[in-house]
Image (cartoon, rainbow, N blue to C red; front, side, top):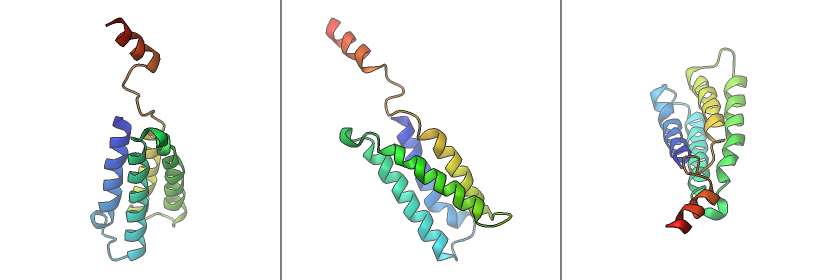
Length: 116
């Protein structure tokens, strides 16, 4: 489930990015980045629980929203909005990775344990 860990790390980056890009004096950017980061981390965390294992796919919608927000915010976008675009594109790639991408398929796992 390394993809979910990367999503949580990206959410932490999004949460601290207003101070890195010097827009901490704009409360709407700070709060929106915090809430979006919380939503990303929550969806990633819920993916660890078997009944909600596909919760990370909601991040696809969040990332499209981040890309649109960053692109439509102004011309040229400020560094904070450029960050939103990059994070959105990155999350589009990571959110597609299945939870157990580094493990063999389930039928193979059961077959191996039955032989032992």
